[in-house]
Image 1 (cartoon, rainbow, N blue to C red):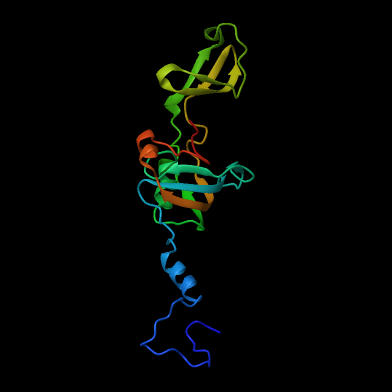
Image 2: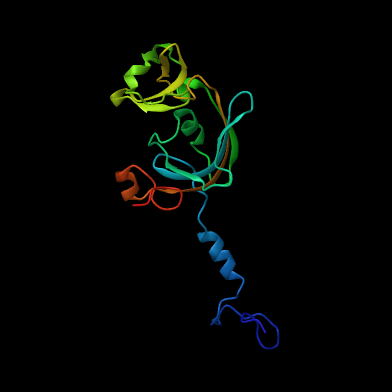
Length: 193
């Protein structure tokens, strides 16, 4: 017997009170309270998986098989071109973002190439691919060693490269006050204090 029916099967009249709500009301109420997917906006915490390729299709980096990456939208924790293309997306969205060098790691700057005599490295072995911190000038990568000199490159390794991201957004939420003040995500995919 359903609570809105009389024992004889007829419906209750308006003048009678139903002591128990019908069960089908619960899902309707729950659906009305269900959170709508949040779109990515300023100070959203965004968690996503990605695969980064160059124009030749070579995979440069990927989060596949690893934890998803988390960042705060608007905090400049990812390249500007990708951050712009994230705006307005929501959890579950998959898209390809093509980022030109000027919105990625910058154009290649020949002025950041320097030939340095090997004796300036204090007798240490210097080989192509090694990286050195050069004070406030940033990180330099050894491109080649020849004729008693090392060719150092102060460009980012992806300077001048068009970046092709395949992105899957896994979660979007509001950043907490602590995350905003600290400038990074706390918890899974973020920073742990």
